[in-house]
Structures are given as C-alpha cells and as structure tokens.
Length: 111
Length: 349
Ligand code: SF4
Ligand code: SF4
Image (tube, rainbow over all chains, first blue to last red; front, top):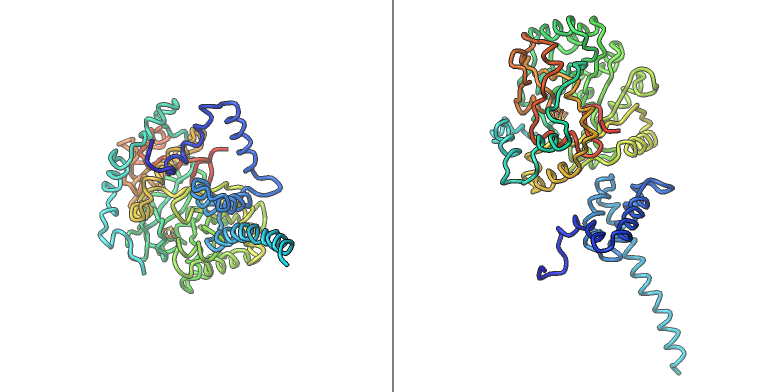
C-alpha cells in the first residue's frame, strides 16, 4: 500500500477491477466502450462531456484521461476551459438553488 | 527563424545518436520491435513489391516545422542534382514502378523540380507531390504551381494539422495557417480537390503535440465541414499520420519530458493488423544523393536497405529489392500504433 490515496499509475490499471468481479467488470467495460462510440453524439462531443463531468465528480483519473482525449480529438484550450466552467456553473448553481430551500425554511420560522 | 538541428550542432542531428536513444534500454524498458514481430509470427518483415519510388529531392524547405523528421529548413543545402535525377529516370524507365512520390523538404525548391516532373511524366508514371502549401505563396516564381501541377496531372498531398490557426501555427510556424488556406483556395480554383476522379488534393494530419492521431474518418468529416464552412475549401481525402520519434520530433519529446510516455503509447498501441500494409513493403525511398532506403524515416536514420549490392540508384536491382528484408528499429512502432500509419494515412482497416 502506498501512503497516499491517488497514484497516477493506477489509471492504467483500471481494467484490473474485473479481477475481483469478472462478469460485472466485463459488462461495465463493454458498456463503457459502447457509450463512447460515435452515435447521435460524436465520440468527440462525448469526450468534452466526459471532461466536464470528470471535473464535476472531481476524479483525477478521469481528468487526466479526458484532458488528453479531448485535446487529442481537437478541442482547444479555450473550449476545454469553457467545458470546465459549464461543470462549475452547474455545480455552483446546484449549491445556490438550495438557497431557496434555506430561504423557505427561514421565512417559515421567522417573524 | 528557427534553425535546423544540424545547423545548431544539436547531437540529435546525428542519426547514430538518435538510434542510441531509441535503442537505450535504460530510457525505456519496452519490448523491442523485433520481439513484437517475433511474438506475432511476423518476423522477418519483408517487402513484397516495389510499386512506389519515393524520392526525397532535398532537405531545403521554406518552413521549419517542430515535428519535422527530415530536419528540413531554409538552412539545409542538400539538394538532388540533375545527374542523380537522371539515375532515377533510368531506374523508372526500366522497371514496372507505377508511382513516383516526390518529397523533401519542399520539393518545389529544387531548381530542377519542374524538369524532373516533366521527364517522369513522359515515362507515364503517376506522380505525387508532397507540397507544404506555403511554398506556393513563398515567392512569385511559385505562384503558378497549382497550374503546373494540373498540367502534369499530379496528385497533391499537403500537411495541415488543424483547421484552426492556433494549432497549425504552433506546429508549423507563425503565419503558416493563413498561407496554407490561401494556397488551398488557389488549388481549388484550378480544379484540385473538387472532384472524386481527377486532380486529387489530399491532406495530411499530424498531431500537434505528444499524442497519437484520433480516428482518420472522424477527422476527415470534421476537416471537410470546417474548411468548407469557413473558407469554401474542398479536398479529397485526409490521411492521419503518426509522428515518428526521430529528428526534431524526438528533440521535442525529450525536451518536454514526453519521450517516455510517447514511446509507451506507441508500444501499447502496437497493432499487428497494421503490418500487412506498411509502406516499406511496397516502396523504395531515395535520398537526395541517390542512396536507397526502406522508407523516408530509415533514410533520415541512415539505415540503408538490406541488400548490400543494391544500395544506390546506380546499382538498383529490382529483384533483390522486391523480396528484401526490411531494416527495423524501435521507431517502427510509429507505423504500427493503433490504426497504423504511412504516407497514405491509416493502414489497418
Ligand atoms: S515537415 Fe515538411 S514543411 Fe515542415 S519543415 Fe519538414 S519538410 Fe518542411
Ligand atoms: S519506419 Fe515504418 S515504414 Fe519504415 S521500416 Fe519501419 S515500419 Fe517500415
């Protein structure tokens, strides 16, 4: 065991998760492969969505993988940063919209 | 202007130094290319025909691209002489080779380029010119190249790493994108790239960075859409080519700390299905001074063809070259990664 939780080399070992549960692991990877193929959205568009989601879920492995993938597929630095801002706006918005719940509660109990 | 590695006296301008790095087990622990072929039952790698003569008519170029495997530039003086061109013509006249692929540098900068094209055409060969586009705008004397190409029914193959200025200029130099767009419009204006059947204009995509090309098909669709929408430009096919870890691209990889991970990417993406159509299997590459190689990359690494009796145009022996064993080293992983790579793009399909 290393003395820290995240290790960049572990990204390449992602496939090893099937070692402990082969059937589910295999199903996941075949589903994953299917999701990222060209469909009604292009593989390129999906890569940018994945990059934004990676930031929203703050997964360093996914950020590593999809920063490379989105750049390789031709997105510019500006486009990629705008995608991160979209993730940020949704996350920020999700926090702030709960402010309405807070306001409702305070309005109810205040005089 | 950026200088070539050679003029800068950079140790990487020396082929032996490049090979020493590529073969150095301390730098990376990847299996040798030979071992990979053995494991896939594909060793030894042999040519099966000589259908294409790829002639490098000189290292002089008006550009100094960061990824250039030739280490070409305005400061390179190696240029094929008319005598050597005569030797090429003699070989072509006495062989069944059908295609002549002219490359450089910027092949058009060779003072005998037009004469050479005209003579090759008399032998009824299909001619490809690897035109960097900006040469057409570089000097008034080159402005009529599109018409010259058309008159000789030449297939034009041109590099454009992106349909955006930013990425193109980062790889190929400031102002290259704008001039390339103008040149493409000039080629379209004389009829290049607008029909399926004649006056073929094909684009080459090389990654502008330390990564492998994405899907050639997806790139082609996107390039066609963007270039037509933004500039009214049409072209026939897009070839996605992997950057070879040699010369200036090797220098870039080493100086940015990307060498190891790039080699790992190439090795991990090894695809035995790419072997069948490797360009070295049907091509002979000729250097500016008339020596023979398996491909332009082996030429730059100064790895001569295996038959020792046929290493120069003056000793060209078609029989021995046709079945020759190909000289392979670690850089060959660049041709077998993913969908494979050649001067005509992907090879595994
Ligand atoms: S890549 Fe082509 S255009 Fe660029 S410097 Fe090399 S030979 Fe010239
Ligand atoms: S670099 Fe590519 S084309 Fe050249 S010998 Fe190696 S595999 Fe063949």
